[in-house]
Length: 440
Image 1 (tube, rainbow, N blue to C red):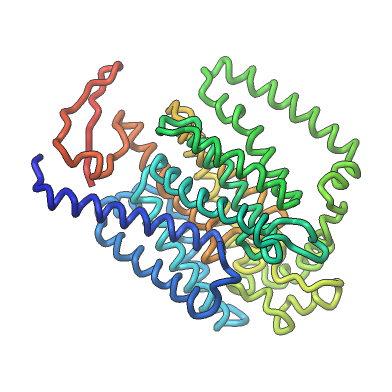
Image 2 (image 1 turned 180 degrees about the vertical axis):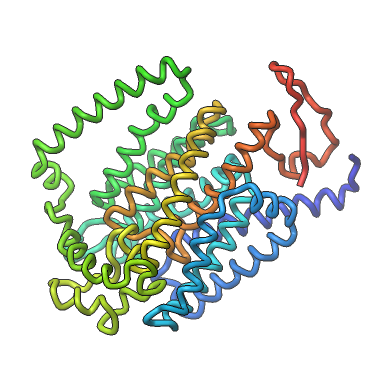
């Protein structure tokens, strides 16, 4: 299809602007420069992202509607429960404020997950993590009074983030993103490998035990996930070897528990987290089904958190476990809705790996692994203005769209920028199926 050069240039510029917006939004949602840009400036940036995301959803409403129709809906249902928990919350203003942020973040996640394919998402994530990784190195070596923590975490890098654990979360995700990009068919793979090794370096500079465990676990998961592509006969042998290896590793872990925690710089009570959880359970039992309301459990001395503060020698601002915090805020209803959606996401992710041979198909399960590990000792579930929630929602939405395409023996949709010159003719696959080229 012929397009006037000015129209073609305009389309390319609009696509470039849209992708630049996505990259900047990812950087902001990652928590980068959170302490430098606070108050009204940061709030304005978030609201600008919410509004622009809504505009782009409207501009690409057909693709977004298809993603909503075919994609996983349980994360969206969970957001709805968080919003309506205003009616039973013990602190309605707090619930209303954080629910507003959660809805805005989910709007961007919905746009990101339905607008871009896995390959496109990973490319944009790679650019964003390349930017944040570069500045983390600058702050770690050149702005040490901010980039390196002091006190009990002295010497641990936090880079451009608020805390070393926030940096660890982001750089572990970055290692998975760059690993996939390095094994995909992109040009200049050396840049992806550079980003990967830089991210590994930053993981260890944070001195975060959870970050190191997360990185090593994700890397060990790669051959297991690739094993899902074997024929079923071979898969059985692969699963047997995996289970036996896991048993050996578990035995070594139990026999050397003290040495394990010492290596991670952790105490067996996980730096006070275990006593914290023990205090939370009786309070959660008082409101088991609906919880205390979204973000209404940890409200300093005004809520149930006051009981915990009186009985521990520190002032936790959250439960340091995403699943426990979710149950405390939205009860067994919220936790159950999340778990249903979570296992459906895993099921679709495994199917996508089994039916495809691309490196990008490993990304959903790699991120799910990171999400599980992050929420063992931190809270990264159902938190507005955070990158883990963005990625979880986007992954939950898009795999069903791509899996449906696989079922119909068709290719994922192409971006307009790939089809500006002319309309390609349908091609024939080796198996005899026709590849249907689609446009936005």
